[in-house]
Image (cartoon, rainbow, N blue to C red; front, side, top):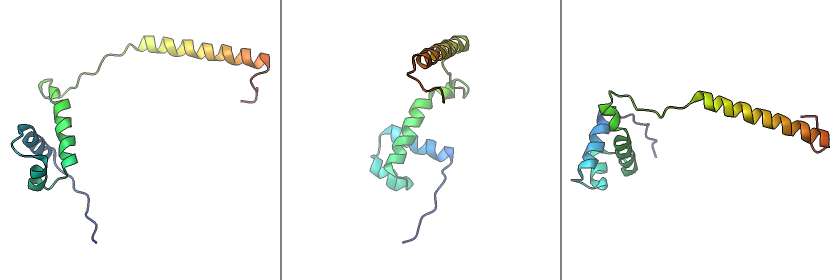
Length: 100
């Protein structure tokens, strides 16, 4: 049995297959025979097209939710202080080994 090499499909081909799947004229089995691609791959490309379709109208930029870094850094500092306090308290109580 010969081993097939991994095929690399262009983005234009993927879009063509995904759009054909969206139209719903043919079943996944028919599309997989037509384009010689596994039905699971067609489903994956269809989902990717559906999720990233908004980026087409944003100029290719997918909007990320803004994260407040100051709040995150403050939380990290607070958790670090709490960990240090608990480590010292447990060490003094003899419940934590000091060899860490």
